[in-house]
Length: 103
Image (cartoon, rainbow, N blue to C red; front, side, top):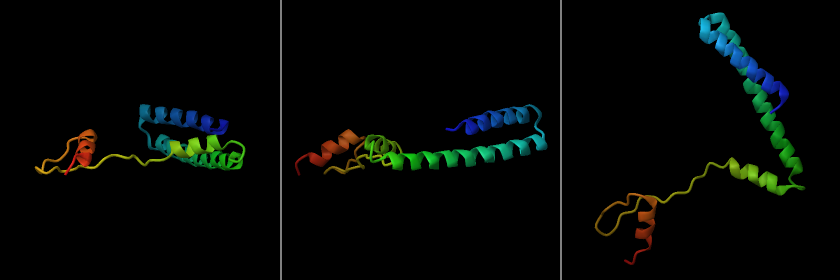
């Protein structure tokens, strides 16, 4: 995160505190404009970081793949399974046992 973004974050937090104390429309509008600047700066910083990763990928692929893996949202789990009696499994372990029991 860049220094400019960190400075804007502090400014945003102060603007929110000021609004929370007084509940004034003018203070809220000030907070909103600073908040929007923070969001755009964070997006720019993220894009810049990703471009750096791509440029460095040849020299340090581990860094790139660790970033990719940390941003994956694919969680693997075992679905519910019925046995011969029609009973549905309660958890993943029980489902795995039922999948591999002889028919």
